[in-house]
Image (cartoon, rainbow, N blue to C red; front, side, top):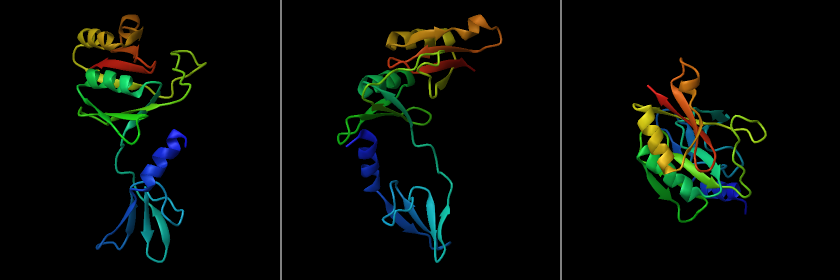
Length: 178
């Protein structure tokens, strides 16, 4: 079973319904699909009227593709002062928790190819920006953890307050002085 399909199957097993006494809505929570094939992660069942969209509650995680999820999670845990959370039922999915902000997830992808910044042959799909109080000090720490410098933008453009790096899997990220 492909990795994403395993995650969807695991998510579907956690679906639960909750009926609100105030509104009468039946909310399906947890992910996957409702047993009738309707989306359950972000829908309300209106009595007699079917499904109505609801708001997404919060960003659960930012997932990064990579060849070695444990190594990448350890890099970000050290960089951000977080902790690595492994999932015994899915060794291809490792999360980083315990820091201020949305958790990061690292997922193993077969034949992973890192983005090539700033080129577009293997473009970045996203990049992460981190606020820092000491750009030089945090750069040294990031490099010691395995990051590489892609561009010291603040040294190229006087108005810039950031520098661009690649994590050990090649994803671009920025340290931004604020």
